[in-house]
Length: 332
Image (cartoon, rainbow, N blue to C red; front, side, top):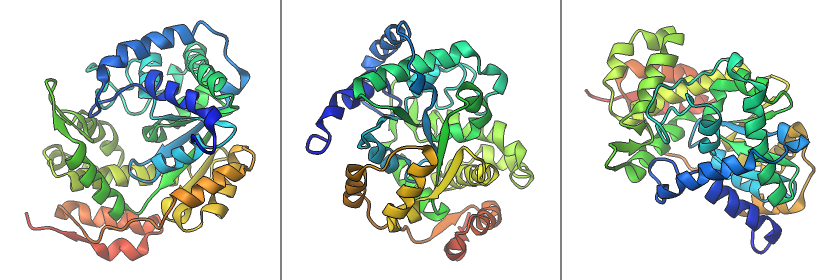
């Protein structure tokens, strides 16, 4: 960015330090009160028209959402926010499913009725500050879990666009397993890892989303006691992949496979820019050619026996036929 787009550095630093917040598993969480204070200041300024036309990167974690966000950080007309969950918590007090900023009741799906004009105005004014500093036209907000909240977000921002990332479930689950082992930690508050504080996110998935799927609901009692990150990741991937297939084809959603992005970034990104109404930008493509490489693979995935069949079925339904035989039941 210093070499190619130095004018975007100030906005990126501001976004990282005073907008995105510091979630669980990260250092420097002492700055969060300052972050929320900056939101109060931002909401006193008028909102830009363009702030009501955000672009959202959604999908399953560890599916390429971060790398796509980094690409948009280099686009001349975009201002990138990397999972600004502090913004969403500030606007809606019951959306924090990981426990980054509060421990009260939370819901994964948010009703469309919660999308008040006042809430939209709060978020748009924060987006506007980011746009002004970045001299940008569109905010790109990466928040994978918004996949389960599309009606709510659409009610807030009817002109929003959504880029939904999908990745082979075998590789996604292996990546989540590795991430949680490397980044998880014990703190004074409890155990912090991929599944939130003391597995808060996991329990919400089991209680709120699993009942929507009959095959998973049959084993809900067993899932409540699951601790293996591979099994947990498999459930999250199944839920997310099924949700992606439900929204695929909507006018405001483009589903992108991570493998296609890595294999043919030029064609894939041209398709994405056209769908979200952003201009072609040569430095954006230049950075894509530099940073993208062949998608990593992770061999076999061993799961609890009850999850093998639904996981294999979802792999096939999502087009990942070659990975179906990479999944097997492990001894319990």
